[in-house]
Length: 137
Ligand code: FES
Figure 1 (cartoon, helix red, strand yellow):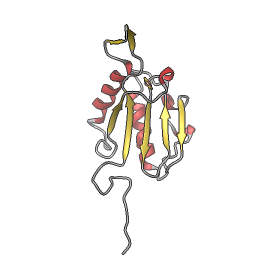
Figure 2: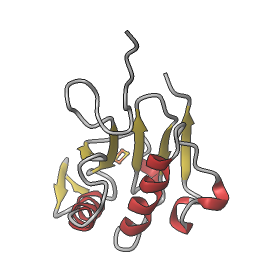
Figure 3: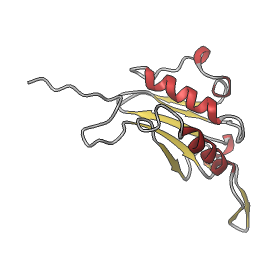
Figure 4: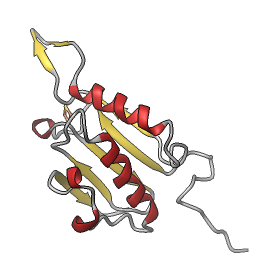
């Protein structure tokens, strides 16, 4: 018997195989070890979550907030990851006007079997701030 796997949708547990990680700590203002107000990362996360409500891939490409991806001096930071695909880490994203470009680029990533995102095809806000392109497992 031959088993086939649709890694583009979900694994055998029904868990989406693509993830959009968003750092919620980026662009924070700190005072005495405590964050003041909302961080830029939290605002970007909210923009993404709002836009994703009407995104075709909202179920296949869930957004997951994370505390930090160790690119703190390049905020705001997001990453695309999926089984069998390249993992990308992007930084230097503006808080207020990059969310639509992030979802557009995530859609491009989703459509490619290897996740490859050529510079010329990426939306403008994700052309310069690439921080890592990690080979698939
Ligand atoms: S605070 Fe966002 S990457 Fe570290």
